[in-house]
Image 1 (cartoon, rainbow, N blue to C red):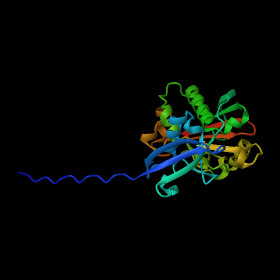
Image 2: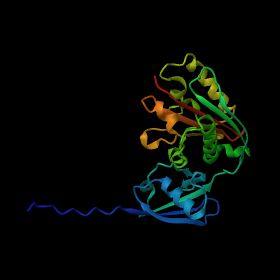
Image 3: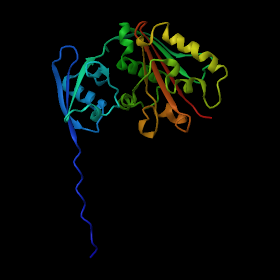
Image 4: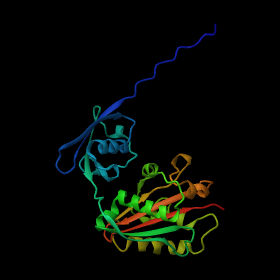
Length: 253
């Protein structure tokens, strides 16, 4: 008879207790147990389940002020098996009062552009409002695309407010496969137009890129770019003016 090795039991996954309190009042809001290799995004999802505050409207803070990114690991903030975060609810309830979808910006003819005016203006910073603008653009410009809204939310990343150094933004605008004559010259002026003369603390940038087959939330739009160049989607919110601009490109040679 063949000899079968006994399967070794899997080592238990270490867990952490995460306590979330109101960043203004200090009142307890949520207490959950999560794997120590979990990330901040998982905490936001649990906060939404417990409190009803949308995960995209949650800003978690550590040590009364340090803003946490969604991909940061919980273990880095644990003390004796516990993590303590404060939550600030971001403004996210507002309306799109004007939209201009399918805007042409020379010489960036390979980039799809849409502009939205938001009221109140502060909500233009919200990832929830910016997500809504991305959806509005794609549903109008690509009405037959099978958009996965849940996957879109998972693809969201907060980017730097310095538009000139924002990762992949210059790649998308200036270096498509077939080239873009004059792009490098006009790129700084376009970024200044998006900034509208205000400081970086008034600008909020999010990316919604499709990076691989597992993150395809817009299949038809992403098809060409996934071949090799890339599928780039950015939203830029100006909470001073209330403007949200969506920039998207997916192409090949």
